[in-house]
Image 1 (cartoon, one colour):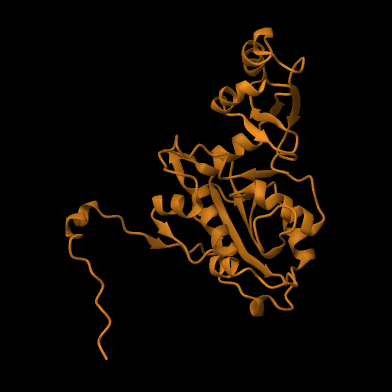
Image 2 (image 1 turned 180 degrees about the horizontal axis):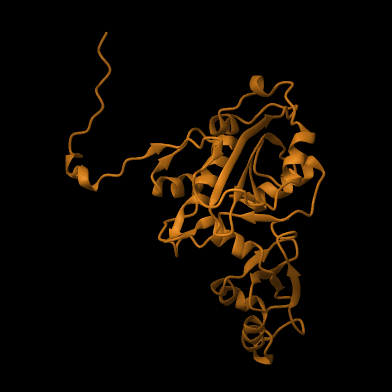
Length: 294
């Protein structure tokens, strides 16, 4: 029997960097208790949430894992204390897609007979000043539907922090984590929760944490503007401006913090007579983090 061929590395030596130009990644471990940073005893409570589901469809996927972890932060946005990890599996009562098994490491046997502790999960969320997820538009609707709750403040660490401005590439959780010197385990909810906490604690500029940036952005009231009746020919203009297509309403929309500036832009570019609008003007909806990401 012939031996298995050795892994070939010939020809790649030119890619090896000097040791001074290499990056070492450390396994992320966030212990429970005081962090030794900031001013302890703050009343602000954050809860980071992550879910794994049977798929990506908003209509028929269900949660198979729910994880959350509380932390406290001070007035400067520094995480002062981290609580215990909570994680529950749940039986979806149907076979998992093999893609989900490969992605999460969960299988039908691990989920059989499992259920989320609804009372505990609701109590933890009720204690939060704000609930945070790295993809809140995905996690929030599913968590609120499963637990039959709604209306609390939520924030999205993916979209509500300007990672590019802070010198990061991309927005994916694992990639962001690697850029601050850490890696985590398989794609499981508890690991993703800890990864998010680590990113929130990171200083995006001297003395200013990502959490401070997120809280400032999240608790600011904004406007959803829907460009009703915008001419089809303006789709590229609207997209370049930052508008997104709502397939259900069949219109372009965007969230803005400055209504006045956007009103002037729309009046000149979308609702001027020369732009052939099919409506008199846009629709404006003021929102807070109690409605955002729902």
